[in-house]
Length: 385
Image 1 (cartoon, one colour):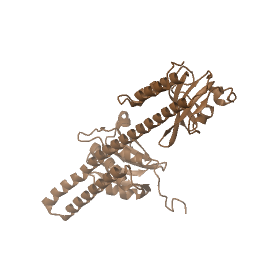
Image 2 (image 1 turned 135 degrees about the horizontal axis):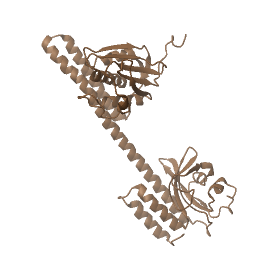
Image 3 (image 1 turned 30 degrees about the horizontal axis):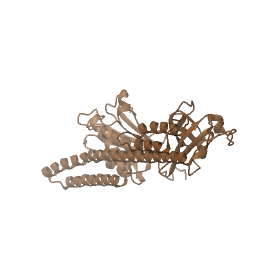
Image 4 (image 1 turned 120 degrees about the vertical axis):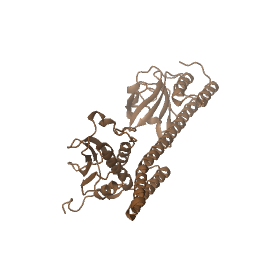
């Protein structure tokens, strides 16, 4: 198997491969495995990930049937279970001679020669970087060979850490961008209220209209504060508090246009949640009902029959059954003026609370949204005291 690669040549090749900025980790990995096989004179090279006492082969080179990408086995049957307990490399020159003949790993894979080092990512053991052969070696692995394998394992750990960090930063950027869109979308509604009531105030001089403008501006300030919180803390919801759902529904309704529309609240439950975020849910559900059900739509809020949550339903034209799986996707809207973000906002906030939301049909044929998995605060009456 050996191509007679010297230590110096192996290190130079390793450097050229790892330093190549034009290729990805996934492209470099097979070349490094092949380089190690050639330098060490063994048939197989493989990278493993260890999770929950299971070894999974991430990538592999060589013809060993069990050492192929995607194969897995209990860690108790893997040579790697001993590798992860060492600071340096684990080496086996001749397994049967060195007392491995009754070991579960030897029985599983039949490897006579083995060298491997653990891969550490962010101070946690990720897995191992290994080379092996079904034939014994005629000499022990040298210090230089051990160092070579350890360097490869360290490089893999660094690359995986960098990839995880890059992915995490991208998710944070995507989250921030999405919530910026969310808040911008929700600010439009209070702005519309301010515009409408200022116009009425100019025509009537009634100070009550100015108060409604102030309420809408307060709501916008709250939304902006939430956006700043998201920017600084990267959280989707703030702290949880006890929320009277009837009070929340009534307040949310006051921010939704539709003078002919009516709201009926048939719940007295108290839930643990983020008031501001849940206000976004109710406002968007109410606005959705008016936009799609008409200005004279009737909206009801009540308890689910199984006691796990609440529903918000209307008597509008509803959502076609074949479209219900798509309603929470960005851009979905059946209203000509809709942004398509409202229902996406709802799902994000519900999911951030650890709850679930489903859409179905109300008894009148309108849309019905069911939120389940909510954590309610039980009253003394509910507890039977």
